[in-house]
Image 1 (cartoon, protein in one colour):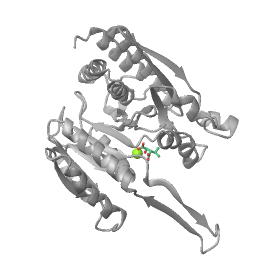
Image 2 (cartoon, helix red, strand yellow; image 1 turned 45 degrees about the horizontal axis):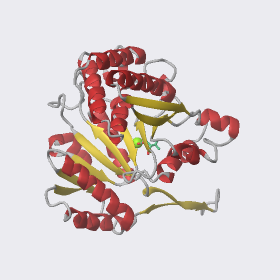
Image 3 (cartoon, protein in one colour; image 1 turned 60 degrees about the vertical axis):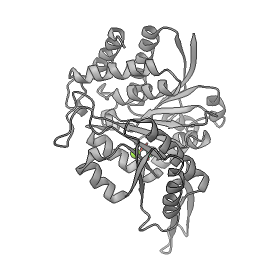
Image 4 (cartoon, helix red, strand yellow; image 1 turned 45 degrees about the vertical axis):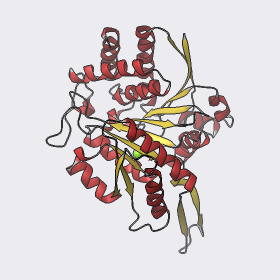
Length: 357
Ligand code: IPM
Ligand code: MG
């Protein structure tokens, strides 16, 4: 029996609804697959915990999580707690504390989903965005001075290190190499940002030498939005800084039909720490508690988790089940359907049992 310790942190908004759905699907995988066992432990950290304790997670939170094989995360954010507190209190300390420096965001138009772009259909927009996840614009460096006075200043310093840039480039080139097209687009803004971004470009060119079989090109981030929209088939694997990839991955999610289907994996490629898997969508207060959250992103990220754990067959079975269900038109309202979270989850569970991969 291959056993995996999974920490679930549903946290805020629709997080608990989608993680509950994801947990049901993992249980179905466990039963259908045989030979796998998920030992799941739930953590009630997040904004409610903050309102009771003044912190988003206990001070020894990372110590508690370290022994797990993976973390399955819902969403953070609450209307009555400032976003920078919820984010810097839970998700970012986990990503940065566990050095999950590669944030991997696949996109694909799933069957049954009508994308906003003309002439795009199922299987198109088969991209993977690799987001640098440990530094750059999210380093947390900067400060405020002279608060409230006319001369007040605020700085937000983007930090790029040779170690940080080299390792994310290597990760991205390796990932590109593993995909059929072996093609990587390096996103930059080195025309306007003439220090860190120029170093980013130089390191990309250096790392490219290690991967002679990978073709690569370079795009300025603003022009990249145009290319993603007007020439989407010209892209495959994409690497960008923390902030650039944050923005581009929202665009990718929208072009693929909905953020409700977009997954993300926060990976420590060296496996010193647990990696963390989550849907990209946030806590979505507008639909919280209505039972209509799209669980597909949470299922897709569970497939990423299974891949990371080496359970590639189970991962393929799960994605096949998800695609059968979307293809059958069992969709939540954000992707044009009328099904609720439970109906989509029931259908995916059934498809897992019925699958024959
Ligand atoms: C994401 C989100 C987060 C980010 C928010 C919630 C701070 O937009 O995962 O893309 O910017 O990293
Ligand atoms: Mg984002």
